[in-house]
Each structure stands twice: as structure tokens, then as C-alpha cells.
Picture 1 (spheres, helix red, strand yellow):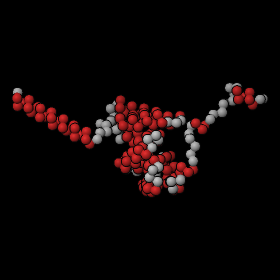
Picture 2: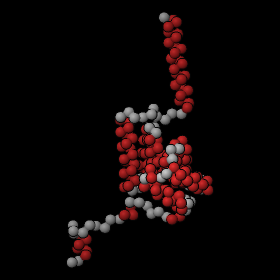
Picture 3: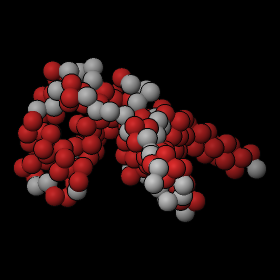
Picture 4: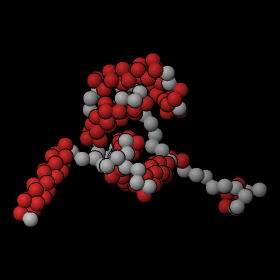
Length: 194
């Protein structure tokens, strides 16, 4: 049989271009991460619960060293933020992910992971913003699907009322206290006059 004819028929599946699914990873992109940390990262990506306490601490130390040597590489900060999350150092993880987003606001993974951490902290409105940015930055179907699933989880949390009250600056608390004092003063005046 003629192979060209087979390719056109329904019997043979068409060739799929897999280069659109994920961008190629250059070996130079992994250079800032030590070899031992790469192995621990692979274990963490496979299943974060497999890493023992010593391995998590070692991974954090090695990634911190890499970040100190290459402070402008946002991907390293995202990896460190993820490792800190697995190590349950939430505040430091939030700082590293914020810095990763600041260094590379057009980074899909930085926006997605920032949204994921905020979602887990139940700061849903901010999580929704970062996840939306990640969806807009998605370059392939896998990234689009990750952002879609995370956005669906956030919408479900919002619909069910599972939110921690949202993210607010400390100044917002002062404004709320001022309004409360004003309301009490107005009530006291109304009682005194009435």
C-alpha cells in the first residue's frame, strides 16, 4: 500500500506536533541549581510527601544558595518558594513567590504558584487575580488546563464561602477602627441628645 494514502485515510493517525505542548528546556536553564537539589526537586514534584524533613531542609538550603548566587533569576525564587511551602515555611514562601512575580511578571509559573499559595491560604480574591494572569500567560494546552483547574477551585471556594476575609493592608484595619470609633461616638451623641 502507498504510505501517503495510508496517512490520508482514517486508519492511520495523523502526525501530532508535540513541540506546542511544552517549550524545550535548555540545559543552561538548569545550571544555577546544584545536581543534588535537582534530584530532590524531582522527588518533590513527583510527590512532596516523599521528602523527609532532612531532605526538605537540605533542598531549601541549596536553593537559597542558588538564589544568593543568582538573585535576578525568578524561576529560582519560584522553586525556593515551592520548597518552602513543602517545608511549611509559608511566610518565607510568600516572600519568595512575591519576589519571583516582581522579577518576572510575565512568568506563567510564577503567577500560577503565587495564586496557588494564596488559594491555600484562602486569600481568594488575590489568588483569583494571579491565576487569571497565569491563564492569560499560558503558552500551551497543559498550562491552560492547570490554570483552568486552579481557577475552578478558587471559584468553588468563593461560592462556598471558604475565604479568610481577603487580603488587606494593615492600613485598612486602621480605617475600620476609625469608622467603628466614629460610629460609637455618633451613637453616644444620639443617646445624650435624645
